[in-house]
Amino acid sequence: MHMFSAEHNLLGGFAFIGEGIPVATGAAFSSRYRRDVLKDAGCDHVTLAFFGDGTCNNGQFFECLNMAALWKLPIVFVVENNLWAIGMSHLRATSDPEIWKKGPAFGMPGVHVDGMDVLKVREVAKEAIARARRGDGPTLVECETYRFRGHSLADPDELRNPSEIHEKAHYAARDPIMALKKYMIEHNLATEPELKAIEKKIDDVIEEAVEFAETSPLPPRSQLLENVFSDPKGFGIGPDGKYRCEDPGFTQGTAEV
Image (cartoon, rainbow, N blue to C red; front, side, top):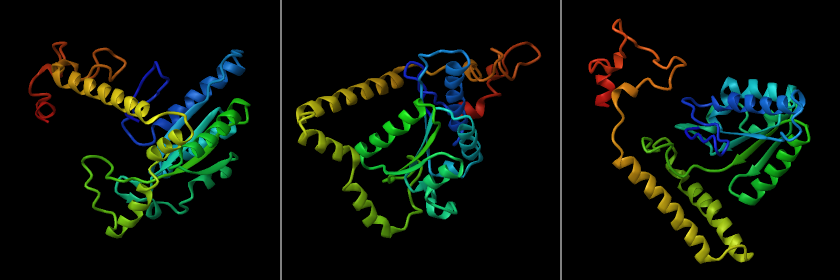
């Protein structure tokens, strides 16, 4: 939800949980409009909306399932169910923990898949995408996985029952990355040195990005409200026509943080 890339058709950048679902539904509507109304035969785009189990209790989720099914939009709703919504256990937060069942209630297929198995997820995704491209509408896919750590660096993960340590070990033994690596080597799809080279390349890219961030100058305070409102000057213009955020007192708290 925090990443955006127009180049890679990644429509992220949302401040709140669940906001990505209506945006994805709108993108899917755009694809169908281009194909059916504007007669763009080459538009076979399918939108994938990714979100977690906690989001499935939000209103946007149900509204968008209804709209997508009603208009047979080319979209796949992918629930990454890691059993925890920040600090709330999935089993304590929903009346029916089997999220995939909510799909048929809106007239679309609901599929449960082992989210720890990359190849099984791939097969389910291929079928859901093919269905969307045929014009048969959306699919709800629940990928059941596991969250090994807290929600973020600020979450000490203290709300889990200590007895879950055995469950953690069970899921750790089924690590999807390690399982796929083992599969690829056993089926001669890649060698150990090739995979290590890929890992090194990724590490180098991350290190370069971190170095760039740490060595870049801090943005000026005057940019605080840029790209927030449609008006280029945004909100908070004083009687003198200047940004209020240029007044040190206006953003002192933000600056201190």
